Image (cartoon, rainbow, N blue to C red; front, side):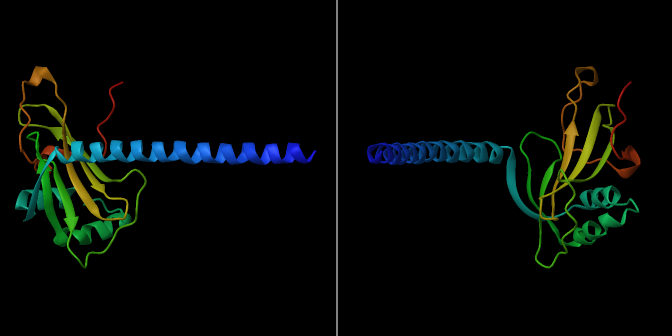
Length: 174
């Protein structure tokens, strides 16, 4: 009976060692994959360090103009927002970072703070999404162009005016 216990303990130790070795291989592989993904994402943006333009400020104010009180902390962040990156693919999407002293907002699920939709000057559908970083800080003003060939509309740095947009999600086509 004692031999069976020793054998069981030995098998348990071997299983633990096998688990540790496979976990180390997985961790190295995962880390390598994450580093590659981070580099890929970095290639989407050009680093910047500047204040918001008047157009960008107006767009943020419009997106946060709903009377929803949960948006109040985000409205108070606007004076503290800096642009830290812009899209490399030609659209007006910008990455945002708060200066010290800004008030954090409530953390909504999904990271989206506000949405609007409209059309580019040639009629191409666009969505505007304001994101937060998971810690209640404004982090991205995303301008999504729908690459519809019928509009022959090249993606541009166009920043829509509030009069060209509707707050909320684009109605689905039935």
